[in-house]
Image 1 (cartoon, helix red, strand yellow):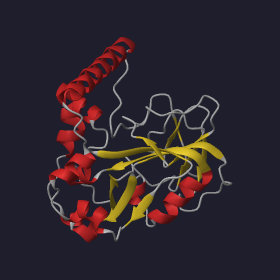
Image 2 (cartoon, one colour; image 1 turned 180 degrees about the horizontal axis):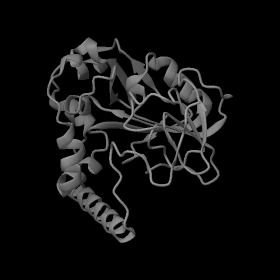
Image 3 (cartoon, helix red, strand yellow; image 1 turned 90 degrees about the vertical axis):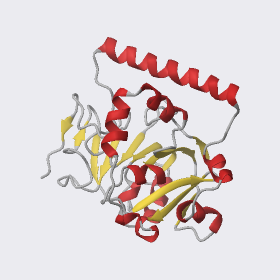
Image 4 (tube, helix red, strand yellow; image 1 turned 120 degrees about the vertical axis):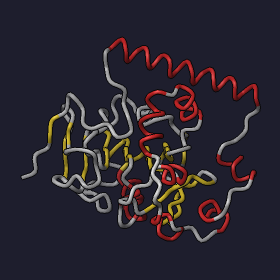
Length: 263
């Protein structure tokens, strides 16, 4: 079942003794992952740099649709920006759920794909009624997009606009779908139910907007705004103090990682 919508891939409920798998860690693996799985060790088509491993991380070349692990072998699985590329999302999601007790998945949202379209993405996603809905882009005409505002939303505003950073923290599922789950993850591929599909092929009504982004009232929203502002300000000060670069959506590589060399 769904537990919550984390604000980012580092806001996860992973215990110190958990054995963690990451599917598709690519050029920027999660530092908490013990084992990294990737289908391609010599092809950067779907990532922004060479495959890397952090200190102590084990690499296993494998297809996410057929993982070489026992049922519930891992305590936690992380999967960020992989599902939108896979040929068979049903097999992929079932394998991810099979090998781990809990996990986190992050993929571009319907809105995110409109603003930052990628031709390599086969699927677009949205969380509807606590269910991950996945639709083939070509079925709703999104494969014909020509406008791309990726530089604006991923880099420019994310780097220089404080209000924009607050907005994305207040609504973590605005540009991406971020779900932390336990035991099982409910999902629907190319849903036939119009209650789900209408979010993908029809203009949104006020009720649909309210379900996606609930209105908690001005007082509560202001409190959330203040909390988000403090969190962002504290993170900025901490990073400046430590002299570290901010993490970004398409950060290329880590300074303390080692390249994986294909045989």
